[in-house]
Amino acid sequence: MQQLTSGEPSEHDLASALGMSRRTLQRRLGDLGQTYKGVVDGTRYELALRYLDDPERSVTDITFLLGFSEQSAFTRAFKRWSGKAPTAYRAGHLEPA
Image (cartoon, rainbow, N blue to C red; front, side, top):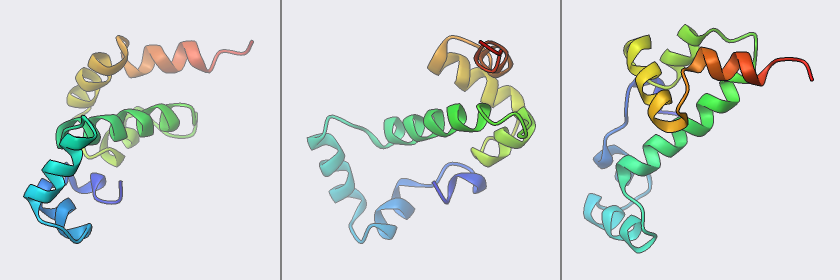
């Protein structure tokens, strides 16, 4: 999570931070039925949902907090994850009940 603001952290950097080789990381993730890309995407999606729940954060700020270089890239990824654009999710989610 800490490395996301600089873009997508490399698999090698994550393995090093965890004190293991890249191959060991791949094996351990495989044992869990996960991939590196899947873990990064899942983390980004969970953080995006949290950030979008905060009306003080702009979609542009969220874009860069999650390590996307452009808002359009974040919007495409969020649509892939949730089926909605970030602004549509926020509008429907933050409406008073």
